[in-house]
Amino acid sequence: MNAPGHRQERLQDQIRTEVAEIITLELKDPRIGFVTVTRVELSRDFHAARVWVSVLGEETAQRGTIEGLTSAAGYLRHEIGHRLRLRRAPELTFALDHGIQDALKVESLLEKINRES
Image (cartoon, rainbow, N blue to C red; front, top):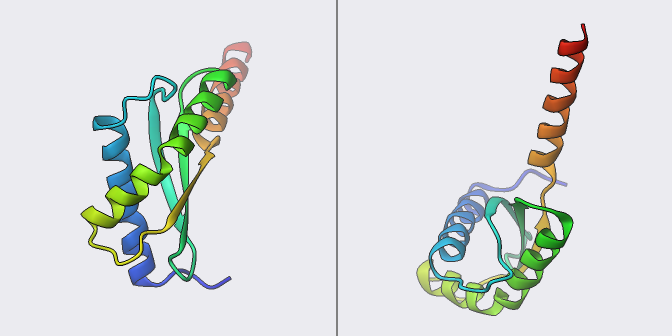
């Protein structure tokens, strides 16, 4: 897989910023918890985008947040197209990014090791 081009990288970053802003300021779905948009992966043809999110809370809260974001995907897609002036906005899918949680677990384990030493 080749590295993404400059336009693709720029658009991924713009989509990440806009989606994060819309989620924070406009979405009122009670299922959506505290969300951080960590990255966006745009397909080569720009027709699909996977939005990676980190969600604070237990697994049920994370699942509920993904369900809420999935149900708002059409609205988010419309807003992205309008705000970024895209002829065709990409289809959005959402996925949980466990990177932050994994980093916190590693940090906790390292602290435990240091205390025991």
